[in-house]
Image (cartoon, rainbow, N blue to C red; front, side):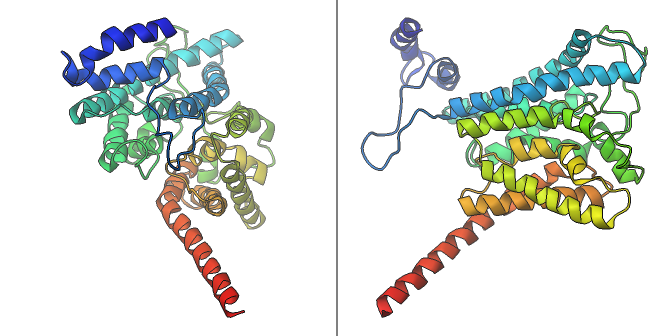
Length: 392
């Protein structure tokens, strides 16, 4: 690889650098070069720079690795839910490949649309292509139901890249999580493609696995759908199945166990904040306990934390370092706010039974205010301490 890198730097790079034959395509070359090799440009060695081996490419790679357990289980579960709904026996690999063939087109469409827009904007501005969308490109299809049409995913991806990232200045400047903006856009623009009993389990035979000809989806009530309808019974609901993820839902959101495995990877690698994760679960558990004590047929605390996208939002969405709170104290407040709001929205807004994703977006909106208040409180405390010392 070193010889290949040296050859490219010597013979290929000059063609794309300033004054080269293909100068206007420098952004494309730089993006592929950065993807294949470690960038050679770093911050200056002098001054107050802190140097280590962590860069955005490593952070995103770690995030994708942490997503793998939830994605793999979600693919199998999607196939399992399909064959169960149509009352057909299927083995492990048949279920897995069914879900894989459902998931791959969504990933391909997301990356083609999202990266295509980012490459074009970077080429127009003659800037580097940021690696941020490599994470968003896998997160967007991960939170989509199985029956979400590809054209709506393409439209939501374009909206998220342009209006949630580029209008703010690109990766690192966005206020809201782009993957959640894509999901929120689809929910409010095309609600029938994102909610109801017909979008989470595919029932047709378009993928060649048999099934019901001419039927695109099977009507299957999700646990949160039953909560919204008031038909949920916590005594008969299998909490263990919800923890394992053997329930209808979006691809990567069903298995709390797989999500927690990913959480361990993120925490050990230092990529995500354990404070946000812990406080998010704590806030959700507290609000769930309060509601369970006073409401009829409300899910238990364990059921609330395992249902829908709560765990996925707490581990992968709320911890986004760009849109989350930055101060340590602020992270506790921010995570608790997201957890509480997720349960409140879920239980009291029947039109939006999945409250976790909207709660994270609300958290993104107030994160700068939380950090400002924390920093200002620290300044005021130090000023008071300095005044006491001066008067002593």
